[in-house]
Amino acid sequence: MKKTMTILAILITFTGFSQEKISSYSSTYLDGKEFDINASKGKKEGDYTYYIDVYSRESYTKSIALSIDIKDIDKFTTSLSMAKDKLSTWSKTAIENNVTSLDKTMEHIKFNSPVAFYYGSKWQFDFSVNYLFRAKIIDGQMYLIIQNKNELVSSSNQFMDTKGFLLVFSSVDEIDEFVKALDKQKVIQHFNVQENTEELFN
Image 1 (spheres, rainbow, N blue to C red):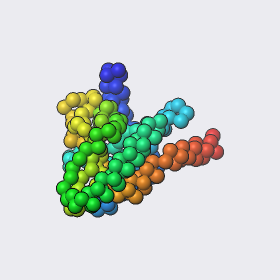
Image 2 (tube, rainbow, N blue to C red; image 1 turned 60 degrees about the horizontal axis):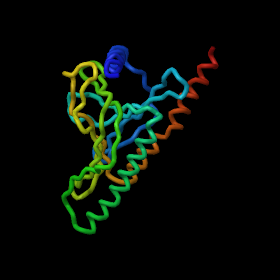
Image 3 (tube, helix red, strand yellow; image 1 turned 135 degrees about the vertical axis):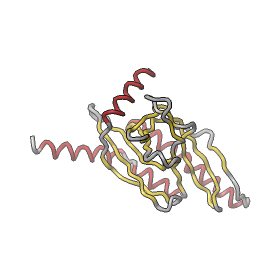
Image 4 (tube, rainbow, N blue to C red; image 1 turned 90 degrees about the vertical axis):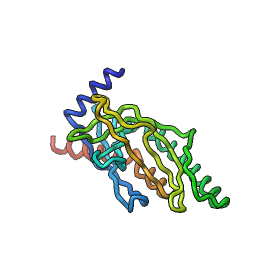
């Protein structure tokens, strides 16, 4: 299995991967910075992959994208929903008890997926990235922070690594908007329209 993943990583690194913009989201914590939500279509029917741009924790890593298969996107949004509920509950508790300092991991909320990162002049992939969900109070406000648990390491070259990514949500509404942007129908409709257009010119 590891050998197969390594071969796949080499192929993707050298040939690149085709993505098309489906939607976007913004982060209040990052001064409203906007990030693209892209997707690619595989050879099989219904085979789509999301590439969700996220904030890079290191300046030399130009781009990082969560790579999530469409069949796993519901698991991801379920984890987000659980984290949203926990954020809402903990925020109320913090206000009621005048808590001004907190950095707590949401231990029972888990997710993992491949993550792509741009290293040097090529895309590299870490195919097994475990996510960490945290609630942290910053300047009097509680945020949901999602990040990689361990540093990202290229599956094709162990010497290529990066600290990883951050997804930061400032409110329940911001999480809801992000989940809406991940709607599977947006991906399916986008590529169906594209296919129908191409068929006109056969």
